[in-house]
Length: 98
Image (tube, rainbow, N blue to C red; front, side, top):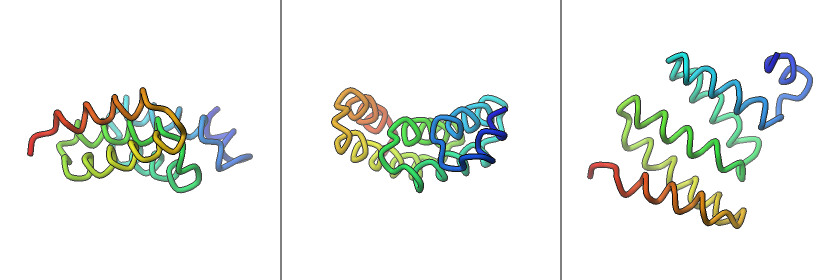
């Protein structure tokens, strides 16, 4: 169903986010990350995409990429005036090993 929505409107961030989450839940990490990246390119202030992409990267052990994703997410959250999301991602960033 989400793919149908995206065929009609490829920049529908909510539908693409749902699809990315489904891929991540099923363990299809690369496809999930590709979907999160598409969201970020089309909607750079869709903060949840950064947060979940960062968490997905952490799960995959790709910590440097996760660090960059969280940093971008913090900037996105600040642009959107979403301090709660910025604080959450800062906490995740702070927990990453150096």
